[in-house]
Image 1 (spheres, rainbow, N blue to C red):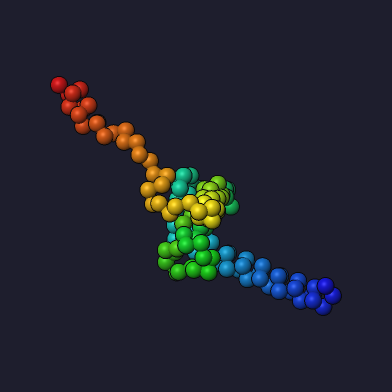
Image 2 (tube, rainbow, N blue to C red):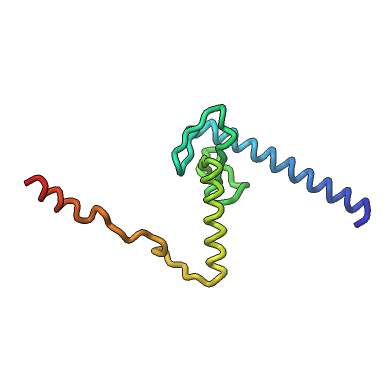
Length: 125
């Protein structure tokens, strides 16, 4: 690659990174004003001291979809955010491997409280 092409590529990448940083800063600040500083998955609470560990997750995975009301966002801690994206990657890998698209797959089948009403009646006697 010649110097002119390399310089052009560097400028394009730098501009894309600046745009992405500006976009992320904008919606992050809005999300932190709209929502309580609590992870939407694990309910961990955040303060100014550890706020850097709270991220904005786009529910539809489209970072350009940033409605003013925040309806496409949820605040997630770093760990839950990583887990969310890992689950998406796992689901995509399963689809590519030919796994059935069964909405009941992976759903819990145990019903630990199914007989609770009868047990309480017996105990009340």
